[in-house]
Length: 312
Length: 322
Ligand SMILES: Nc1ncnc2c1ncn2[C@@H]1O[C@H](COP(=O)(O)OP(=O)(O)OP(=O)(O)O)[C@@H](O)[C@H]1O
Ligand SMILES: [Mg+2]
Image (cartoon, rainbow over all chains, first blue to last red; front, side, top):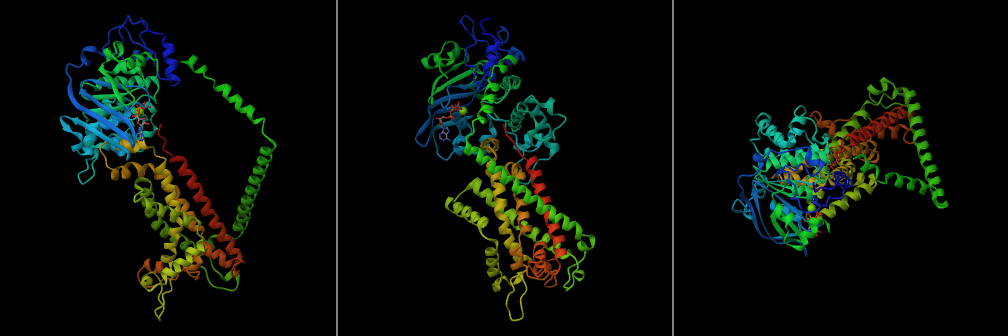
């Protein structure tokens, strides 16, 4: 197989350096993608822990959820995102890659207008959700439809149950009771792949869970409000390889129902989970295409250098 | 996995640090010696105060003193106990804290989460700094000025000529709240500032507005900080003497004013453990030094208990994210 020693890959992950080395060394082998399961075996030790039934997972259809039309974001003078147009489709995972500071997070945070919380941020262009301009939508409603997961696990200091129920409890008179919420909470925990671990102690404080469990709890917390789109900003960079594998598995399972955008510095992770890949550089969306195309036959010189690991 | 870890040069870095200790200069050594000496000296002072008070306290403290009211007497045996001062301390602490806690938490939230209008915010910050530094006797005199106004008459005793006395639990409690306020604000702000930005954003990302984020996420996260600040403020109130002497009046017993229960006590004058100690020790009128020792010991126990409580909550209540 065209794979470097798994040990090498592992060491880099552990020491915190993003494993930017290509899996395919001599180019004669197509990149192994978990979601495609080309039966070449898993590319790293991580992927070995889960094998996905191809037929069931491969999206039979995709449908446009969000459409970004010449988005620009400035912080004071600093242009963080320049004239980016991209689509987010349900049924597939979009990975945003690129060197540090290239505007991935800013683009992601524009999708749920979280970037508007920064007083210096100025946004231009249009972002549509299901054909509707998000600027004409209520922030609250938009953010219920477009959920987000952060780099650091950040459960609230309350019980596991209350964390997942948090987004469901509206202010006002008709607050739903625990009985009503329970099926939704359980379902969200199941879909986030953490139910088995927490089913006995839903009333325990969420912050007593391990980092990986906390991150999956945060996924459940987002899923509970039934979002159409899920934004993930380097969701595994603070986690160990096992937790990472479980979360990647969850992402692949979720994509049939939810459009997923993931920002990652881990190119192997992008290859494993993504269908579409966008490569950003200094605020520009330099390349956008299917994962095979971007990793195997990149059109731009910069993309080629980046996916080869020539610069980070 | 194991081989990957062992390659990290953690050991080497550690040993370099150890070697660094060997090359301290003379100046550093002298500084270190002075620091140690001062530290030991301070510990000795704290210990001797505690032990001295404990010995005296245990010697004079008994159940009778705790449950009997103070009396005016020329002989020590006729002076009664410290029941009223204990109730006074309790009332004043409750009153001051009840005012300071909600206002302090509110100010802290406004300063950290909104901070606008920024000029006013800076003004309030400066005001709170000023409260920390202000001598309590100055605050007390200021309180007397306010509460002796005729429009403040409902809060204290009014003499027949119409002069407002200006001294009562209300008056003392109001000024005590100013003394506790900076501690509540400080504890709450510190706790709020230690909550990472992404925790707030996680709440917004679920479609919540700022008000529910504050109520459901930030305040619960800041709980231990709020408790710590409030308890420190309480300790401050309990230990305060000048405000009591100036604003609560000089009667050793509670002297209710008016006919409405509870309210009459708050409108009236009284004493606290601190003013009791002050008046009965040789520094004051000195009629019952033994009871002053007993009261001082009770005071010390309360303050030590509060400090232990603060340690406990700040140890247990720390939330850490990632
Ligand atoms: N709040 C802000 N104020 C000012 N400048 C900002 C702010 N947030 C981001 N920027 C700038 O915008 C640019 C893009 O930042 P962004 O966080 O989107 O990069 P990124 O691709 O996510 O980087 P990384 O991979 O390191 O997370 C950077 O140059 C950054 O300095
Ligand atoms: Mg980023």
